[in-house]
Image (cartoon, rainbow over the protein chains, first blue to last red):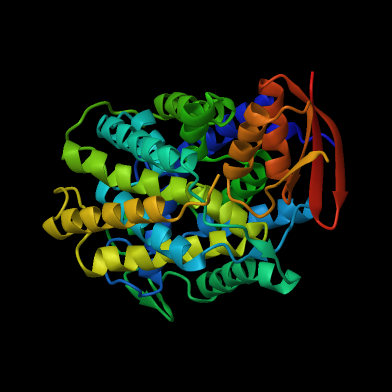
Length: 360
Length: 72
């Protein structure tokens, strides 16, 4: 059976759908230029679970639960669920960790970088340039034989672990609902102000997450792969998908009055160009070395990839560190500790790229 | 003996890189590539076609795809 989502039309359609849905999520309450942001949302989840205590970014985002679950459903519906693991898990953890640090210095993952631009935030241009630079460095390693080795087939139940974790999180969210004016509800933290306090209604977020998870699993949508394949193979298949996302979100933002062009005073953003660029160099390199953008890692974890699941857990821990130790930027800009962490992360990723090569 | 490239279990985009390297090097006009996900299968088909090769046959057994590609 031909997979229509993997065709040119398919990937364009998926990109358009994600762009419009992201813009709508913002319209329905998600933070500005953050209809969807995988890094920010995982960071908010770390906050909701109390792994960090930055009170403005705590919410167990249903979109992320939907991403993994939607992919899980699609993988089963099309007989593509393949439980596998064992490709350098500790390295993937570190890559996820530093990808998150880099993303939080910029204040967004590649998804949000494109959405920020489509909402008029011109600082995102620096982020996207940084992302492309990081990916370019990653492709040099790939060309030189960089590999984390093969994963192998595993038990069905092992492939279910990440989807089950997501179900447990959903149960936590349902049984510990937000109480107006309260920062804590049972086991979960909720932001009362800041981006963590802004959200679309839970079930809309969840359903949109499920739809995107489903579509992305079928189409193999990947924001890093989009740029990587263009650089490495001069192939624009995934890139037209990403471009479609940006254009659809731009048009939807115009229609919904969410387009405000400029550098200054952009929502959940800063204007330190060097660190917007640098943060995304780190994130782009880490995603390339791990073989997928943060969204793609979630979708892969839904179709049974245990190594992608480890990357996601690395991101969760990275987010906790980023806020516990003041590494994440804020509207005021990057922090000194964040800049130090950026260079540590770049060194770690370069070391991984240089030393983990197979003979070609 | 026909050339076989085992790219199963490798992360993106390594199966494609290995396929393209093999296409560049080989004297043969057919190659077999082994992968373990539908995604890698699609990626290899797309990359091979861009090089003027075509997918001749795909056999799925033991949770692996054996893709036979041939120079057009």
